[in-house]
Structure formats: C-alpha cells, structure tokens
Length: 176
Image (tube, rainbow, N blue to C red; front, side, top):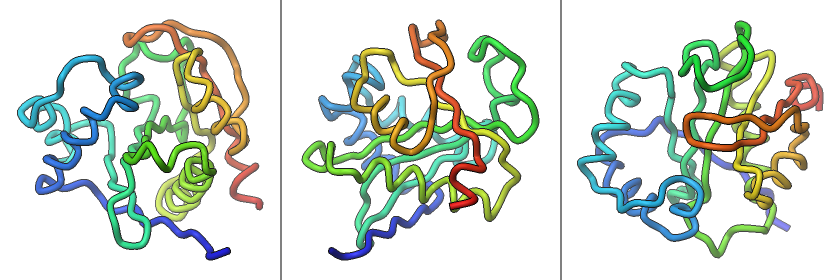
C-alpha cells in the first residue's frame, strides 16, 4: 500500500470558491451548517482568517497535489470565551476539519490527516493540548478522534449547540 502524505497549505482568497462549493455538500451541511452558503458569506467569515485578523488559522489539505479538505487551528485562549467551560492555558489549541469528498469518508483518511496536521503544527508552534468539540451524534467524527488518541472529557453546550469536548494529550502524538 502506498504511503499517504498530506500537505497543508494556508487558505488563500482564490480558494474561497472551492470552499464555498464544499460547504454546500450535504455531508458537510449536516454538521457544519444547515443553510445555503454563498461566496459572500464565505468571504465575510474566512477572509479575516486569511488576513490574520481572526484567531483561526485556515488551511487547505492536499492529497496527491489535489485539494482534499479543510482544516484550521486556533488558540483556545483567543477564541470565544463562551466556548469552553474552563480557561484554556497557553499552548491549548482547537482544531476543526472536514474531508470534502464523501466517497473518502470512513477509510481512515481523517485519522491520518489529523495526526499529520498535529505533527505539522508541532514543528511551528508550541502545543500542549489539542481540543475538538464534535456534536455528540456525529459518531463518525467521535470515532475518528478516538483513533487519533483524543479522549472524551465532557458534554458541553457551545454557541453552536451541544458538543462533546475531547482532549488529546500532545505527548501521545509527538512521542510516536
């Protein structure tokens, strides 16, 4: 079997149309949003991130030089103070991501993609802990995170609704 290596390149403005297309896919709308997403809405939300005027740092994921999905990280301490039930310390990041093509779901790509992204980030920034907050009924995401090494901490209510807070001890990945 061929070794799978993902590339992570910062999102740029020219990629906003493909991001808009992806965000309207049914398998993403189910978890990310329920309304039609326009290019204008995507520009309003993601351009500040591209320009560095937002706490989220967005990336397009590539596999075999083709756009594969989206991933972002943010320092939990810089995010919405209503998001986490505690005060995240320095080095605590949150991540959000998706695989664009629903035919590639359930094949192990998500686990590998997240693991490689965390390795990618640890070469650039100081990370002590990684957090994710999938909806409790998003079993595919929860299972993927558990395969990476995340553990369920508690069910929380976020500005987006109910979520399961999951935490990864970064030493589980870095010391592999």
